[in-house]
Image 1 (cartoon, rainbow, N blue to C red):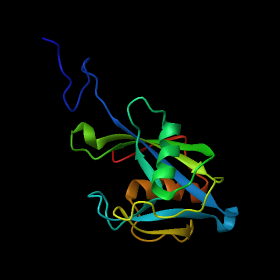
Image 2: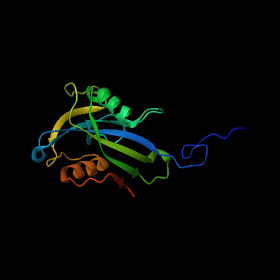
Image 3: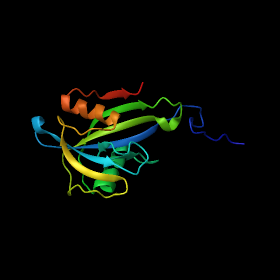
Image 4: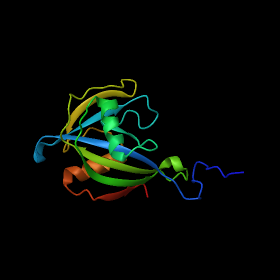
Length: 163
């Protein structure tokens, strides 16, 4: 009988992680740079927190770039996004469950087609531009770490969160 994977390991017993793509929409000059954030609602995860305007899981067989572009269109109706890698974040919620072990790929986006708008009102209560030096409270903690790094010009290519 063939072995079947459980929630924490693949067929070869390797530990698995959940990949996600985040799009950090930016506009303006360095000293007045703004980021587009959504106020989460009805998702069951970090509701009532501000978060990147577009983010989501990478689907099986999908590149992280394709996932970021898909999420931009699905969540804020923006297409032709020009994506520049910002950082990769290995993240843990320290539960021991695979669903809580993540690799998040963050992209900067400064050029796109369309005007941002809320596409999923059941998951997003508000969508606004904020100056990086005046972010709302609260922001999803691991996303705040990235936004702070962008603001300060100190973001490393690979970061960790929750360890």
